[in-house]
Length: 516
Image (cartoon, rainbow, N blue to C red; front, side, top):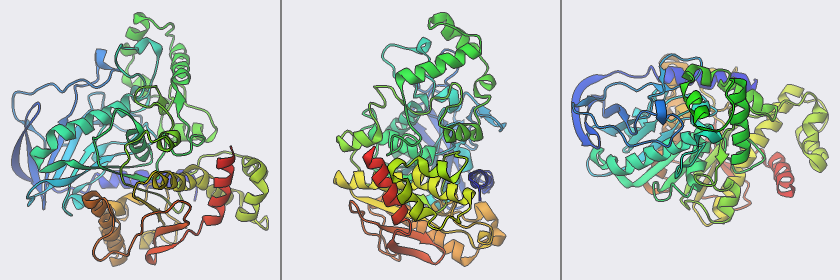
């Protein structure tokens, strides 16, 4: 199956997930900063949706660090999601998108651990409203999902936008930071414990977790972190690389010139802020961004994560090696048929990227020369982009003395096994959120699927509660040791502790990366 089909399936999940709701009105007024918010009860979960955590980043606040929320006089009826941040191809979007959603068990007693979900989407698409958090919440945590600015509205470092005293470029990450600070100030009112916050995310959301882990501006805002197939910034700086501030400035300047905007003065800033949001997101869909990354280029105006010297001061790899990170327990892993970024036209070109390790790679991936080119690309690129970097991150964190758990997600829902030879990028999410029906429909869910959702989400919730994913009724998951090839694998046969079936190919990539 191609990378693009895998991404499409992940997108289908997200669309379906947004439909898994049945609301029962039950006003729940809570006093927080900004005013009173009124929620509702949905089954066994209390919900508040669309709560602003910052001022709308519009007009002169476009491309500014998030500003304090504007107070409201009347009770805010928080019974519907706010719009997603502006992106191509969907309708319910707005620049006024900086909102959070809060979920808590309806029978909550005492401060509960908090799980903050950061959505993925190649940094250009997605939103909190397409991830149902109710099933996780029902297991005894307060869950929070957030929106943050995307694309050129979220990651754009034109020199005309410089504001003294504010970091420039990583506005989407600064939004996440503001949301985490909002959680610290307000979550106790919802029954959450601000001293027991776990941040978790997938793909660009997992990369965002990395960004918050290593940013000097995010210290003490969370106690644990879960990274699911993390994107940029990643543990291997050569894969899905970050930009320097100078590189990001040039990307932005070149893009502005395409729109007829020259210079770096206040006039240029005004012209940029007058552009429509639709103009700014045009040509920056998830497919276009991933295609550009596969070609080792960038979409015009889209520099991805930026080492700006303030929010991000160095690569993830160097930050962890140098001790410049949050130093919290982490869980990290990738999927058995995960996202790979590359566009080499021949087998020879695929292997040539490994330089002097090309023959070793060929002996592992295609020993008799019979592997189909497209299948070879899937196997090589996913190891390069997602699987080996996750293992490397686990080694870095364990070497730094932090409790670390490494997983592989290989489970495919029963009804999809005839079509999917492994777990595509993003397809672990319905199980870690314990909503397997979101992908395949309730009629197709088997007891086996339900059991895997209970197990996967159980590990996730246990980790959020205690810093250790192990718990009653779950197979033992030992902490990762540096250099170990042992992983916890979520397979079609159940959850199994095993030697990594990809150990040989990952060893080649590790040797290649370490020699660079």
